[in-house]
Length: 480
Image (cartoon, rainbow, N blue to C red; front, side, top):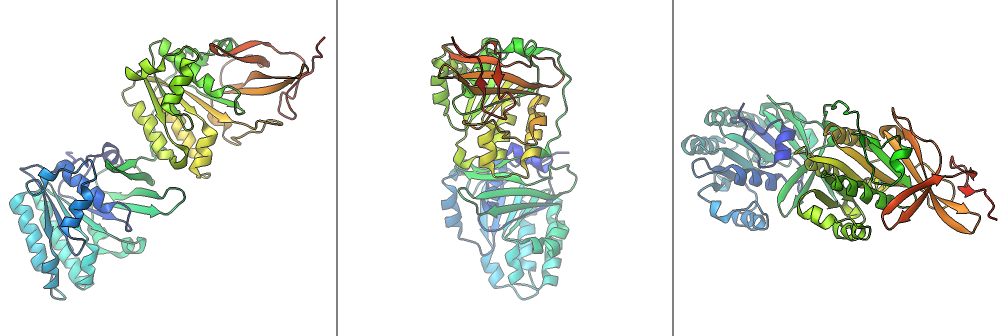
């Protein structure tokens, strides 16, 4: 089947391919949800000189104001106004409409659809028609409109500030081939918008509410990662070097390919340096890497890597390294998942790093959703044939606490870096492998050092107490 693309690749995927020519789609949502911006963005993406887009307004804001609001968006093209995107005001027809008569309005829309053969017809807002005619007259008019316009093969897009109650009883929704619901939720510090496909005939759409952002580029939608069901790739039965000196030997030869590895540790213990070492190892082997951070900017990471002799600047310039900084203040789980998904699209990325999971979980404020989200994210990365390296912060002082209670099973490998008290009045670092799924590993505690070459694993430590986190990790050896 040939679909009409919306101009938004991820939205087409959510819809199950795009919009079907000749279909009627209702775009419903409260004020501020993005209905008008999305509809106009679809118009500019599809309109041509041969098959224009016609945008009808009922008693909405004047066209001059609509155009003024559009000028700040990247998709807007002033040269398209008129020849490719035409605005038509129906207000005068509505003022002259009798209580039971929308026929002149319907005839005008149908005539233009048949004569001009537009690719898209938008009516903004259809709900406002309820103020001019009876329910029975509206029902007959919309049935007439949808059946006649469908013969032109144009997509008929009906916009309205419909409530959930309206969607249960409105004739528009009974006639529609597709129903797309937009939502708006006031939330500090950043408000949240969403998109849900309630109905889409002849298509397999992605369920759930997907995150929407409105930026200078226009309407952006980020699919809910739980909606994906990626196919598992067969194991390649090989090991991936970690880039941390001495750690591969402790892990039985390295990290099994495609595994998700979690590195736990307090602030300052070396988790970020370990991330950089993992990335540097991949780059040295000619791999492509993706690194996502919430605190350090891309330039800060490049500078940090340079202190250990790793040239991330050149790797970024040649597109072998993608550094994505997502400020913690407006972090969104679906935006993060989209960044990872698109980073894996071409199949060349083999290492994915997130620093750190604790920040992500705290900022997202979606406690109930987080387990399913994290499970799906791990599956997406694994299905793409990449290895996942994630850090998470633990308590700095006192006994270790588990920051991911009930979620540790999602990771194939768990590594722990901790501070240790030495009797010589010094604080050191220790590292151990808590878990490796389907792989032998050394269960001992090893010295851990931050050197000029990055993180390194030293010799096995003896006489240590507090290994299981019931007390502070201490070296019981009394120095001579």
